[in-house]
Amino acid sequence: MKNFENTPKNDKYDVIIIGGAIMGSSTAWFLSQNPDFNGTILVVEKDQKYEFCSTAHTTSCIRQQFSTKLNVEISQFAADFINNFQEYMYNDARVPKLAIKSFGYMYLAASEDFAKKLRSNQKVQAAAGAATELLMPDQIKSKYPFYNVEDIKLGSINLVNEGYWDSITVFEWMKNKARENGVEYVENEVTDITKNKSEDRIISIKLASGETINGEKFVNATGPRAALTSKMAGIEIPVEPRKRYSWIFKAESPLDRDLPLTIDPSGFHVRENGGGTYQAGGHGAYDPAVDFDDFVMDDNLWETTVWPVLFNRIPQFESLKLISQWAGHYAMNTVDQNAIIGPHNIIQNFFFLNGFSGHGTQQAPAMGRGLGEYLIYGKYKTLDLTPFHFDRIGKGNSIIEQAVI
Image (cartoon, rainbow, N blue to C red; front, side, top):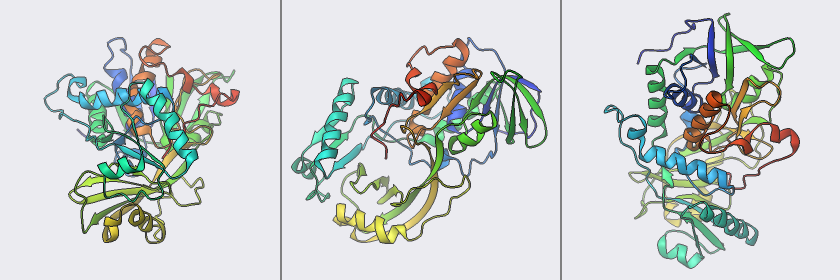
């Protein structure tokens, strides 16, 4: 499709979405294809190349191993959406058929405390219909003989709809189909948000190019920059950018079977990448909030920490060649590591789609569908996402997600 324009065609829209990566585009697509919505939609995205957004830096994996039932259900819808993607796109012949490569997530517990959490989480997951299995060390070794399990107390894995999926293709088609449905995307940046005199409603946004654009409903889908966007509306939210590093490496002696996305007790993770290559990820011992534009790599982390962790857990990774590396950002909700979605409790035409804390890409289908429903009907018609509303933050009703990688 043609490039984004820089200037909106109109000076007023029914829905203005600030941020056009996978969350904003999911919302735009679900809204635009709903026959009960016939309004206008503007998506303001600061970089149409999406070079530094979290969507571009994702590990592109999906799991159902969460500690809260709602997060399990959110991923179950995402799995259905991915596995039936062409059907969701109305059998458009241009849209490819997709499927999840289900190599699973393998959580490894080296302490009794974490083993207890895995057992507790597995009960939540099983009650929601997930196929999570608990494995003793000898069972892990039998299924995956390449692991060193000398320090492991328990493992947890699900081989049904957990693993790799093509999130970039899903994102691109949601964006493209939204545009075909009449959603207008502009490459621009919101620099100010104006409220009415009683400060209970947003009236307009101001763009970096100088235009003032009026709207009826406004969505904050700006990922790690969410707090910056909300602050323009006079709202504080506990979301900050946290740096996450990724490494692609080639093994001199590749494993003889798929490597699950393995969450080592150290906190680092590694997964199958295909063709004898693997992807590792994690962060340093010090994990502060960083500047919105800070994507500088920690060049020492691989040699001093990551490679020794990989070699200890999988001795076959003794000889590796680092192929590429990059830094991306989590949009970390520092209160409970869960989404903040839905309306503000006072400024009720300002909607959140923020704070996904590293599991946002896989949650985008359910979150876009849910927010689209709320924008049209004033309520959710499928999954009830009310527990993730903003007002829980001030009331102390945190929903702690313990399974954060």
